[in-house]
Each structure stands twice: as structure tokens, then as C-alpha cells.
Length: 329
Image (cartoon, rainbow, N blue to C red; front, side, top):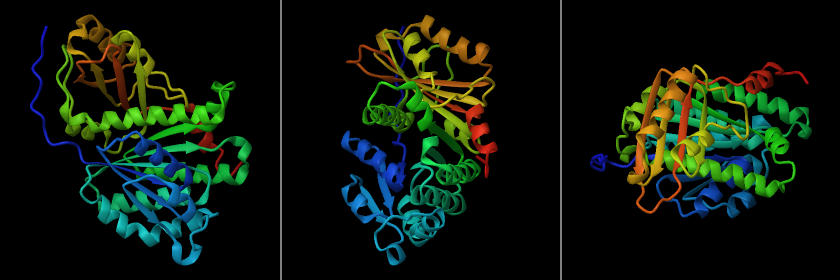
């Protein structure tokens, strides 16, 4: 069976913005891969940390009152981002998708992502805004946890889609793995998800599936709230797909979600109707997701299929519990 590859359309205009220490680390790790299909922007109040960051654009926030040092409080983080938000909006004004990255709990990341998400919503309403946030270890103390609760609540309201990762889950699942290696696993997964976004405009149709491009994804994603992004690799399409549904750093419940966009990266000759029928059956019948779109990213040399999924309008008991303890312990 063969499929006609669509004509290559204009590539997706994507920006990835890392805010604060953790966000800038994520940007550095993406930049180090040589990835060039997105505008990579780093924003921080800490001049030394920003100096060590690898990015296409670096923005020092709050220099006039923080003097290139740590923001310390959420209020300072907000104020610092206010001082540079016009520059950032100008830098992002041509982007169709803006992915914001931050660790929540500290000042620069928490205050910064909330303020920038507000500014994007107001000034660039046509852009699709996705926020990826990492929540602190509960052992980091109540001040950080309350900052993170505030930040997460605001980010979910202000972004079209929010992806959440829990450091506590990382610690629990990867007890015997050094923390640096566990974070690398988290960053590698994020990078695969970012790569998937960049390929959305150039996907081929798959048998029995509705094809996808960015316009389709944007329609489902806009204002969809909590989301899930997953990546899997395996010997078969089925194995890779099953891996993509496992949330390694949270507890996303995909049942009854609003919609899903998937990308299969594989040699065209390795794509089986049986494999795609299984994918469709799980998403439509088992998970009850009404809108399912899947596209193929053909790769001649690839032996192990890779699957990336973006699920919109998901539920998470962990997120609900985290937010419901707002102001508490």
C-alpha cells in the first residue's frame, strides 16, 4: 500500500521560550541538539545563569532593580517580566505557536511565565500558547509549593494548553537513577514533543485516519486547558503508540479527552493497516476521544517507529489535588 506524500507547505512558525533557571536549562538542552526549527528564547533575571544559557535570543529581565541577580519572589519575577514583555512580544509577534517553559515555585519562573502568558493572550491572541511547567519537590517547602499553586492556576487560565510534570513523580519513579539523568530523560521527552510540533505542516496521510496539519491542531487545542504530550518508541507501531500513552511524570487521564493529534515517524513500508486500526480503536473506543487525527512523518532510514501524541482537554487527579490545597499544607 502506498500513500502520496503531500506537497511541502510553509514550515510552522514556532517559538520556545524558557523562563527562569529551569526554563533556561531546558532551552540550553534543546539548543545543544542542533535543533533549528524554532526560535529559542531564554529569559532570566540572573545574569550569570543567562550568560551560561544556550539560546537564539537571550533577554535579561528586571536589570534596573535586581541588578542581574535572582528574583527571589514571585512579585519580583512578575515585575521583571513586565520590564521586558514588550521586547518579547515584538520578538514573538510572527509566531504561530509559542511554547513557554518554566519550573514553578521560584520567583523568575513563576512570576515570569504568568506575566508573559498574560501579555501573549492580550497582544498575540491568534498564537497558540502552550505552557510546559515542572512542579517543585514537596520537600522544597511550603513557600515554593504555594508559589507553584498560584503559578499553575494562573497558567492554566492564561494558556491554550498546559502540560504539567511533577518532580515528586520523577523522584518516586526513578529512585535509583541519578537526578541529573532523570532530568535528562525529562528533557529528552520534551525535545521529542517539540520536534513533533515543528513537523506538523509536513505530514502524510495514514490509512483509515483523518490527516492532520497545524490548522486542525489549533482548532482542537485553542482554550482546551490541561493537556498531555507523550512520546514512545518501539519495534512496532503498536509498541511505540502504547509507550506514548504512559505519563512518566504525572497522571494524565486521557479518557473522554476533547481530541488527540498524533504523529507516527516511520518508514512508509513499515506502516501496517493493522497497527493503525489498533491505534484508532484504543483512542476512539477505549478512551472515548471524539476527535482523532494522525499523520505520518516518513523516514526512510528509521527501523524503530516513533509515536508522538498531543491530547487536549485531559483530567489529572494530581493537578486537582495540588490546586485544591492552595494556601494550605
